[in-house]
Length: 236
Image (cartoon, one colour):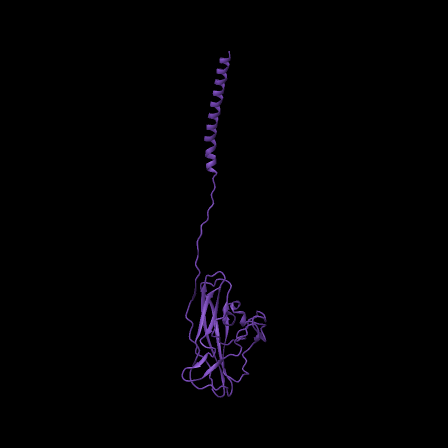
């Protein structure tokens, strides 16, 4: 009796275990494809675009226009332009540096034309071109196709004051600077943009001015005078 009971229990257990195994295997084959079809994986694609900046055309040499008498004085003018293109997201800045702080030097022998007297102060200086001094002077002003690009040094209150502490009004040929032979942004920057320039480039203009007063001191000997300038455009 006991042996029969044991055999019956064993047989029942075996059948139950077999059913569980079959059910587990069947469940795995039913659910496994569902798990595979729901797998998700994210990834990114990266591309680096290099920055580029260039002058689109060579800046033309400047021949000053106007008669200058070394004894009785006079005023002459000259203009040149440049075009810069860049894809830099924050734009570019351009500086001008001269070979000498006495920029206009006589080609043979002694003699020079001094830099415009307001050549160092960039935050506050008088507008206009002051000719009340006794010596000959050389100065320049900046302009641009988009006047917002002109450095704050050439802006001011629009009437009597120039420099970065006097406002942001730009008036053509209202603020004049003298030559610097040291490339420091505070004194040599003429253009500063905040975005890429278009494919046609951003055009900037430099206006030069020379004045000789009546009976200048020091004297200005007759001859040809030359100033050498370097424009540098850098990404911001």
